[in-house]
Length: 501
Image (cartoon, rainbow, N blue to C red; front, top):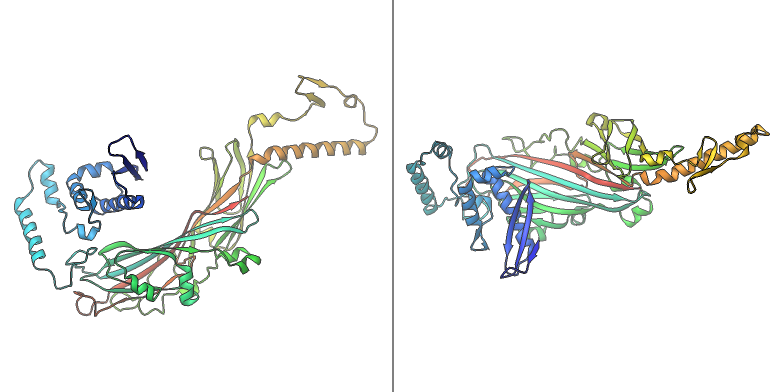
């Protein structure tokens, strides 16, 4: 956000970066900043819906007619109007493949087709379907040959641990994506639950946000019940936040199991005689709290194709057998480190990237399937100037400040006793090692983070208990329609588990 007071009238410039494209919006009156930014996000979503993603400058230029119509419908004379993709499809004409072909060879499009399309559109508006009143977020006359309903719940964890291992912050951001491919106007009821019943669900889901289609009165009356008429296609049904911090009682008897995460991290640094080594210990667990109770098999509401019941295949991990995947440990290295050598990993592969100044340790899904502890030990190499910083060179004590040296007679005489010589050599070596440890201390990493994904499990313990269609409120479904219903759970950490050291 940039304020431009020198312009008359004073203007505020809002910007958003997406897919290497910079989107701008200006406001010359007092307006809520989040309102403008939310409009830009919706504008990007609509562009991807109509002209395809990822967004490219060439795609926007080639689809200028569609983009101009979208901008005119979404923002009319500076006022935000229609931002629902389903409703925009009834107002924006998208050229078909024949129009694109004729336009590519320099011929005008078929006017008969355009008139027919406009006439049909006008006829549909004059004779609305018997499927019910118009809904802003759902286009009219939706028809699908195969009726399907999918629920995808994704949670992204962000955990920060102190050097002692105690959690400083632990939050999970959840999103519920819904895909509706069903004819007519269905009225759906999605039921969520968590351990601890109603109170447990209220504690698990904090700061919820919903799509406009959700009936808030039903949620306030019965937390966990999402009653809505869905848009056609995929959309974001709800978002929430979960506090994963253990209770005060659990903190007194804290362990990594209190956070209920499949991995935990411990960093040891300044190891070895010269303090140039550090070690990462990664504890991997195949126990996922709540996974056994999250089985979809006994749920009568989630059905197989055409039968009304099923256990959907989640691909690579289910609620009864979650799978730990994409396990990567990232260790940022100070810029003063010249290289990291001798990377010894008990599992997976590790390598140092000088351009990124980080060590990346990757563990395959097969290697992560076995519970236990995996270790990685590395040696840092400091700047070249530190390699020749010893005070003792060839038996003489150098005086770096004056540029000369002090010659001692002990360097030319035989020691009176071997034990005294050994003791002196040992003390000298210990003094040099202590100095090297101090020199290498700034070269040690200060943190380490873990990235992973688990299919078939949620860190919050939230699960779907049922997905039902209210046939009394629904319109235009057809007789005997039993849609296929599926649900997926997934927990992701994108460098979200961070340990300070």
